Amino acid sequence: MDMSRSRLILILFILLIGWSSAQAQTEKRQELEAQKVRLMDEIELANRILAETKKDRKNSLGTIETVQQKIKLREKLIRTLDREVVLMEEEEQELQEEIDTLRVQVERQKKQYAHMIQQAYKSRKNSSRLMFILSSEDFNQAIRRIEYLKQYSAFRQQKIKEIEAKEAELDAAIDRLRVQKVRKNAVRGQLQEENRKLSNEKLSQEEAIKTYSAMEKDLEKKLKEKIREAAKVEAQIQKVIAEEIARAKALAARKALEDRAIALGLQRGRDFSSNTTKERLEGLIASAEKARAAENKPAIAKPESFELTPAARTLAASFEANQKRLPWPVERGLVTGNFGPQRHPVVKSVIIDNKGVDISTEGNTPVKAVFGGEVSRRFRLPNGQLAVVISHGNYFTVYLGIKDVTVEKDQKVEAGQQIGTTYTNPITSQTTLHFEVWKDDKPVNPLLWLSRK
Image 1 (cartoon, rainbow, N blue to C red):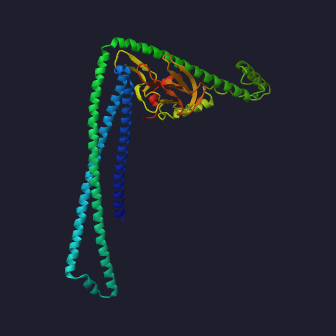
Image 2: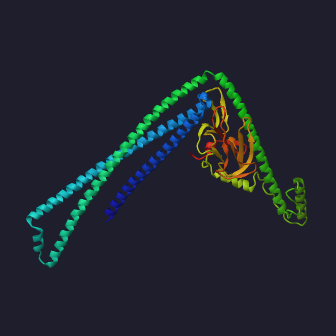
Image 3: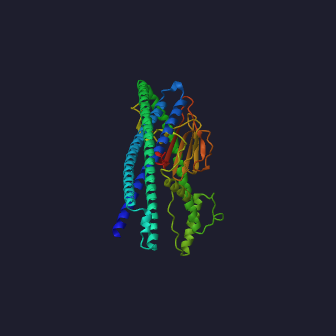
């Protein structure tokens, strides 16, 4: 009994491992399929962005950046297709092994059935079924023999059904293998086509870079001017955020002061109001403390100083809890400028220190707040674009490259609420949203906060 139970447990364990492996492969294949669709969508978006660029600006620096991102996406797609082919080959091998096992099982069942029929034929030659029943010693034995013959006949029918079921299972496995080979060949064909496109794009990109490298001095001058303009914008953003932080601290300090006044017995509306100056309120608190001491009452402990109000702290904590889960500010876009210091892709002598990320997209794309908060500021840049800063406690999100802003200063906004549409440069026909995330007075990498595409 123990041996049988151990054997059953072993069989169940093997089946469970097999099921888990098949389930893991299915999930992996679905993940690769989803990634492939996403990458192809982003490549298609890159093509549409490039198509919007005016023909006389075909080799603009912005176009080069977009094509470079497109090349990276194409390379990632090729790696995904490679992994998909490898996974298909593994599944194909497993299917082939399953087919081989099923064939062995079918042959074994057929041999067993043939042997059973052969034995039955030999028995039939020695004595007929009727004689087998008539030769019974008594009526009860005859009944038992009739029942035996019925069970034997049913057993044969069951064996035939088992063989047919196993053959159907074998045919289904063969069909799955056939479909798998067709799918694999289709993916291999796509892989070859993607490699061909990648080669052409790299060749075109190299030619464009060579063209611009010949004008490196002129480009360096223009890029440095562009960097100086960007620095002015960043200084303006930093000033806005510094003012917001100072305002938040002042609000928190005022609330702490009023809370202390109330704790000492002073009443809002009778002893002080929101218009009472800080100096006057501090004087009232000092008088209340002296009166309390004269009555030998225990002193009221001073509250800790707050940098944020409780509501702002809650909002900041909620923002922080959503790290790597924030929605993107635009529905579809390509990151053509990464966070942090980096060499320019063409003019290597120029170092760009990006405080956020540049997201290339299509014109008139809705720009949405990535999290709930309050509009700290909206202002216009020298080039005519608009910028919006939204505070989320001690976190801030910045959106540059907007037109038709639909929110006002101090307005509360919800996550996903549209705040404007993307601005398209009338000269280059490029549409780029610059997006930043700040914690206190320090910019942080937005890609560490936004959800994975």
